Length: 71
Image (cartoon, rainbow, N blue to C red; front, side):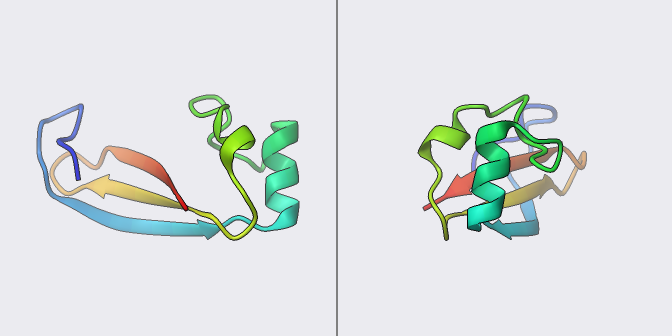
């Protein structure tokens, strides 16, 4: 994992994992409020596929959250 952009720490905890379903992908493409990463990652709606997933990591030092799309 990369260093935290806030504090420089390199230790992270996995806090959530969302599997992309057909309905969630539709919400991503429509930038629905249920898709909480739309403002920061609008491009994910174009590259995500059903059964990909979004993992959210939290810095162990400052609690900064960082989502990652995984294929």
